[in-house]
Amino acid sequence: MKEENWHITLKFLGEIEEERVEKIKEKITYVARNNRQQSIRFSRIAAFPSLENPRVIFIGLDDTTRTLTKLYRDIGAQFSEKPGPFTPHLTIGRVKERADKRKISGLLKEYQELDFSPFELKIEKISLMKSVLQRNGPIYEELYFINLMESSD
Image 1 (cartoon, rainbow, N blue to C red):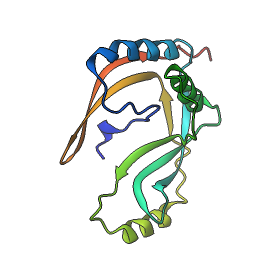
Image 2: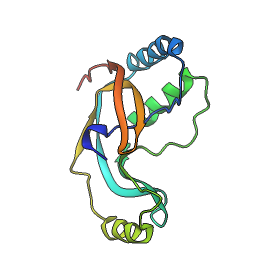
Image 3: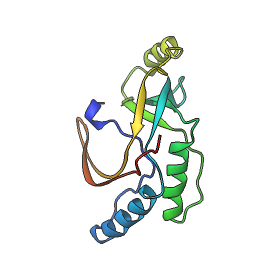
Image 4: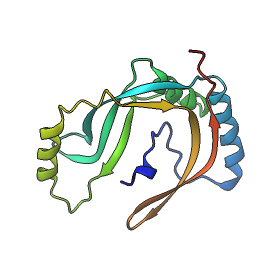
């Protein structure tokens, strides 16, 4: 996955009608105005649904400050949803069906102890993203963004 496509998904909306975009922007704005910018640390490499059967490869995010979990819950509340389980992560790749999953699984297990915690990511904004699936992977377009409140530290 290209670095410019890296993102943290707080809410997947799927296909939405154009007339809903303004209301979604309002919801995002409300959440952003009630949350502060915060730095979080990376943790370790992992995969969904598991290392043995990787479909999505990601680097976990150490959410000890509960920054991402709060954003996730606040966004869910705006859509009147009861939050389900949330694993803060940064997707770095997807495994295609024809790929040798055993080989990929072996590599992931070999590197699963790598510690990415020296690296930080500052959570500064919430974006409404549009994705268009292409044969070479998705193309992302930012439709709207709003900065979170400045940290007071």
